[in-house]
Each structure stands twice: as structure tokens, then as C-alpha cells.
Image (cartoon, rainbow, N blue to C red; front, side, top):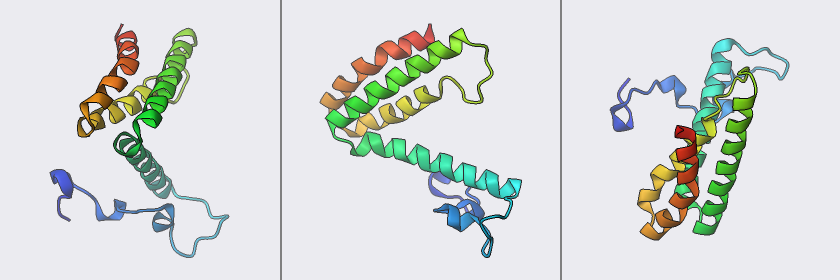
Length: 132
């Protein structure tokens, strides 16, 4: 077991590319998943979702990226307002969408400066609102 890219340890058993790679061979649709297999599937889905948001920042054109950022900011603001007015019983962190927004912002350094100049004004007021 050797370190993967970035010198982080990667378990070869977790290198699945799809859910079918994780499911035991010969299992039928009515089998009950073990907690270990369910956790591996959940981890795979989270990893795939993270990579999608990274790709959004790298591959979307500027118009689509602006619309996506505006939608994420609106959804995040709505989520934060709802969570502040309700007792905290949610399983999802109210700032989870903010993490998705910052994932996209990190990829802006690979784009022309004008793209960052269009995106940051859409995000900055929300980040300031979250901080205070």
C-alpha cells in the first residue's frame, strides 16, 4: 500500500469507480447491505459529488458558472435563514452549500482574471453575511 497522489494514503479497497465495484459479486437486489459496504458506497457518492463541483469550476462557461453560483448562493442563504429560525434537528450542516461554493471558488485561479472578477461580487456578500 503506497501513498497516492499528493502523498496521502489511499486504501486500495477504496479505489472503486462505481457502486458496482463495491457491491459483492453475486448479491441479489433483496440482499441487505452491511454497514461497511453502505459506508463505502456513501463515501464513493460523496467523493463523486465533490469531483463534480471541482469540474464545474474548471469546465463550465462563464455564463453557466455565474448562474450556478447565483443559485448556490440563493439556496445557501435560504438554508441558513431556515436553520436560524428553526430548532437544530437537521442531519445536514447548514453551511454545507457554502463548502460547495468555496470548492468552485478555489478553481477560479485556473481561469482568466475577468471570470474571477465576475464571480467574486456574487459570492462576497453571502460570505460576509455568514461570518456575521
